Image 1 (cartoon, rainbow, N blue to C red):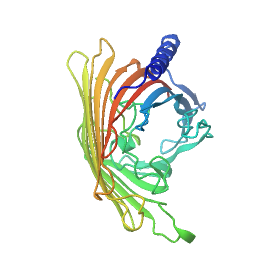
Image 2 (spheres, helix red, strand yellow):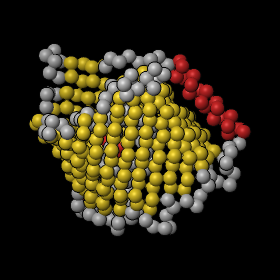
Image 3 (cartoon, helix red, strand yellow):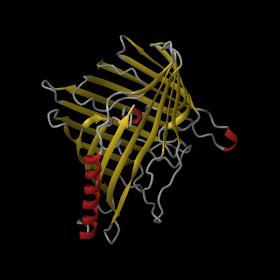
Image 4 (spheres, rainbow, N blue to C red):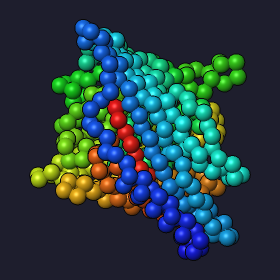
Length: 367
C-alpha cells in the first residue's frame, strides 16, 4: 500500500527538518556537570535527555491516509545525589510525546512529572536496598535506559502491563533488595510493590523478582545499558517474575554485546514474556510477547544498521495477534550523547490492513 503524494511530501519535509537540526546542532562535550562538597564526600550531578522525533504512520482505514507528527518523544531532566558512600538518590522527570497530535486533532501538552525516584542504600555490593518509584525488571529491555537503546525505541510490547497494573511506563512504588554475587556474575532483585490497590486499597501487594547470570561483562548499575558501540563485552542470561493475586508474568531474556577486533561491535538482545491478568486484571489478557533485535556497529563510519522483530500472541482467538518488523539505521555522531536514528516498521495485525510507520529521531543526552 502506497501513501498519497502529499503524505510522501510531508514525510520528506519532516526528514529534511530533522536532518537540518542535526547538522546545525553542536556536538556535546563528554564532561559531566557535577557539583561536589569541599571534602568530596557528597556530590550532585545533573543532566538532560531530549529526543526530537518525526513520525508518519498509516491509519489503516479505507482512505489509507497517514498520521504525521513532529514532537518531543522524551524530554527529561536527570539528577543524581551522592549523600555518602552508601546512600544515593537518583531522579528524573519526563514529558513524553510532548506536542504529538491526539486523534481529535489537539496536541499532547502533558505536564512534566516524576518518572523515576530511586533511593539506594548499599550495605555492600552483595546487598543493596532500592526504594521509591522503581523501574521494574520484567525483562532486560524493560529495565534499560532510554538514553542508550540500540533501536529507536523500546520493543512495542515491552511495557504492555503498565496501564492495566496502574504503573507509569513500567514503574511502580515499592522497595526491593538487589545484589551481585560470585564476583558480580550473579545478580538478584526481589521486591514488594503497590500494584493494583483496588476498592478501599484491600488488595495484596505486588511481588516481583529477577535473576541474571553474567557469563562475562557484569553490569552492576540499577539501569541496564543498550549497545556499548563496540566498547564492552557483555553476555547475560536472565529470568523474571511479576505476581499479584491472580496476575502473573514470567520472562526470560538474553543480552550479548560483543566488540569486534578493529573497533566494530555487534549487539543482540532477545526477550520473552508470558503474561496473564486472569480475573484480577481482565484488561490484561493472557498473551505471549517476544522481541529480538540485532545491530552491527561500523566504528569508522559511526553507523549501525539494525533489525528489531516483535510479536504479540493472545490465547483468545477473538483477540487479533500482531507482529512488527523494524529496519533501522543509527548515526552515532557522538555516541549516545548525540545521534540520529531512522526507522521503517511494518505492522501486521490479524484481520487488519498492513501498515507502514516511518520515524526519524534525533537525541541529545548528557549525564
